[in-house]
Image (cartoon, rainbow, N blue to C red; front, side):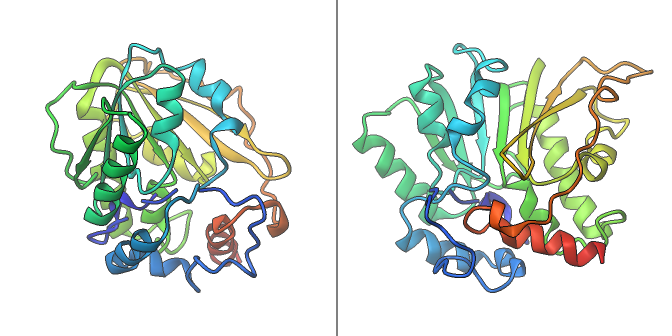
Length: 267
């Protein structure tokens, strides 16, 4: 999740099944702390693994139904997540991970080498300015990274222009580096009524669909297929926007900080 906060910019990842928002010793007192790049460097220096928005087992079925093992994959904001390792175990070996934090990149490189995952590339880069050629990847995936862009967005129905600018810079880059039939997968807290206006900007050629996972609380798994948009596109109308659960005890680790932020903005 924190790849992008360097400008402000962010990316992390371990799931502690016993994690409790009130006793979590890692999480900051406010979601706004995520906008401080020094926070991430310090955190990654001591933290080996943290997983945002559930671990891989909760959405593995969605990955397998949308990503071929032959696909080239770019992960935005790898942090210290195990997502790339899980993809590798499922036979997807052409993986490039990026993060803005040099600490995260160095530790991820060391961890992957120690496990023998030599094919996975880890690069220090800013997702707001992707350093890759156009049409380089079959799949771009992010898990919680873009959510950090919204922590100071203000009104979620009408986010601040600065927030929209950073989000659109990210989406522009993703759209550019995707191959003509590539897909962008976004795993997020962001409800469809907030993400739809951004994902479906007229400049993009992708279609939009989504699935949900989680028990009482919904996490969202968006699939944007480049080159599949129609002028009268209605592909996501069959998906009814789920109601928003407000029970914090259904959330794990620091996820509740994002939930609290949304609730505060909606009041």
